[in-house]
Image (tube, rainbow over all chains, first blue to last red; front, side):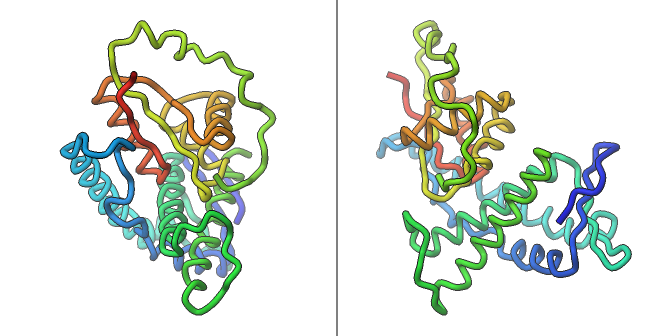
Length: 150
Length: 102
């Protein structure tokens, strides 16, 4: 994946057909973080109402992200084929949003793996899909960050 | 936090003016980011810059504080603002909480 053009408040990324396929496959896994995973406070027994509000807000955000993701992937103006390659055109704010989505997939996959403190060594039929999703989301995440930071 | 490239800046090289001003603030809430073994260092820095509008060096300082010390107090704010920031950080899948300031 390359950043091929910036201008008019837009960033244009070029992906090979294989990269495009992998990106779409990994994005389809969103959302992966279970609801209620993130506590508002470490102190238990306080602010239960606020915790509910936070959970609701995060659920709403994920729902909205899911809708936007569907729109992005079906928008031929933003994702289109050109001369055998694929071009993804995003506003900077959309790139931030896409990083958020990729990180949800990465962290959610890690949670599905049991939140291991060190990288998993056992690759088997049970762990492979989550490990793949975690690594793939992380790979795209780092590439977008590298391209953004120049 | 997952190990990635180490930024040049190390903890302790930025004077944290917010700490000095703590006593002048109304009683409020500290927004804390906690270490985890999975988020990339670069991503955490990116999120701090996005959420708080910080320059890179300040964002890296707090990211390294989280990485090396297990947590970093990012801001001290009113209940509403602290909730807003925690929500923003959690939207980005960071492990953030708010605690009543002692």
